[in-house]
Image (cartoon, rainbow, N blue to C red; front, side, top):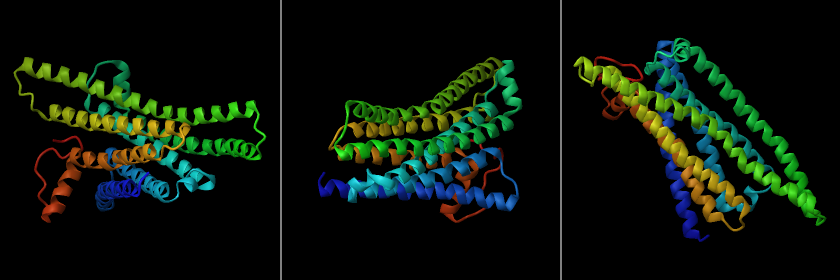
Length: 316
């Protein structure tokens, strides 16, 4: 890989990192100051704040990984450095994805309207359901990160055997199995993706039924409920699009692990993965009425210009 390509990768990564830190940092500061001022916080603001914190950690890890990739590719792929990066990346990555999924579920249960007993049972217990999901996300993130420790022990043994030159066919097979298992570990990202897709389709169905009822009643379809449906759908769709892009980029990067001399592919994948935690923060700001109003006030330096009317997180 040429020196120019490496510097282009560094500039792109640094730009995404700065934008991501600005977006996620703004969310943390805005919601944190509101929390301290009002001594209370809504469940949606709590999830968004912790989501931003997890993505700040994820951005730092990706930046450090990118710098090591440019200046010391071999050091990055060997020894304790790779282990530390993988463990922290796995924890922050899984936590970030599951928190975004919790937000999708919260929007769905708060806004969608269905008469099915199972949905009503969840809707009446929305706070309890989402809190249990958050605790489960934290637990699964810790377990997934700690499971890497055992994987690294196995890999260290395999590398030691490889270094002695006494490599049997059995150990070659075990080493390849380890690599495949490491790549397939990315499939743990599929459950939150499926849950988010289900939330999206439930909101679409609920919006369709609501608009149909409004038309039959001769009422304008631009009511607060319709606006809330559309806003939540936009947020979930943006998350799904960015997450699919992120997942495919990481999958390609992981698969390049089997092919020697693929530094360029790895760097491109790294740059694409940074776009997800950086870009989604601004979508969350624009999709949350309180954050958007605070952002506008900060830009114009004129506090107190909040529009009258509905001020909830799903407001237009």
